[in-house]
Amino acid sequence: MKARLAADNAAAQGELDAKGLAAYQSGNASLLSAAGTSFARYSVVTVQLTATNPNHFLIGVRTFISKAKQETGFFEEQLTVSQQDQRYLIHDVQASAVQPLSHGPSVVSVEVLQTPPGQRVKVQFDADLKAETVTRATIQIKDQDGNPVEATVTFDADTHLAILAVKLRQGTYQLVVTTGVTDFTGVPLTQEYDAPLVISR
Image (cartoon, rainbow, N blue to C red; front, side, top):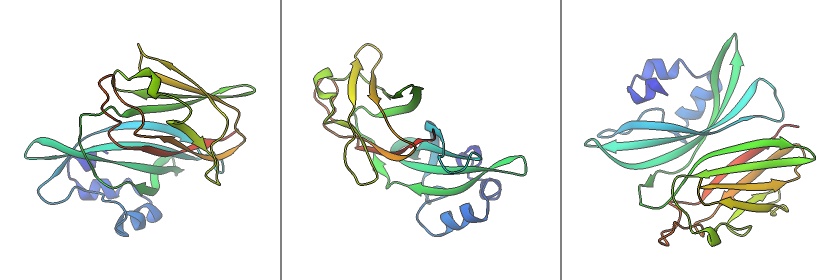
């Protein structure tokens, strides 16, 4: 990511394996920023071990775009990173469309904790939220068929942290946080948060 922020194409490509390079060259994601813009900063939202390969990780990254030294938007990537010859290389990428920056709250991190007999999924926000908007209807985990799974949602307004208590089997699910979540003034989430959730055991 540091090479991408520095617009160093050669160094950025050096962090990709052949499949990762092909994924970026396909046009579905941009390794470097478009002309007239730059990648200003990034934040890691999730890090998950994949269910199928212990040497693969799924990393969710949010990258902010600036123009004339002012941040104008961001996009998210789900990076599959694999260990190859003692190095971790980007093996695949799925990218969202660029979203303009707004003044709404956003999801800044997601963490899955194994708490037998189930799991706790911690969803961290970056703003004071209206607590009554954080519910099972606005934060959901969906199975591979798109059906919401049973979950108990609790929210700590002081720490901006929502916790979902669930019982999930091994596999890949989808975490969805809708724009029904608002800050305390009623401004909705910047954009719907939709990202894979991997349960490896």
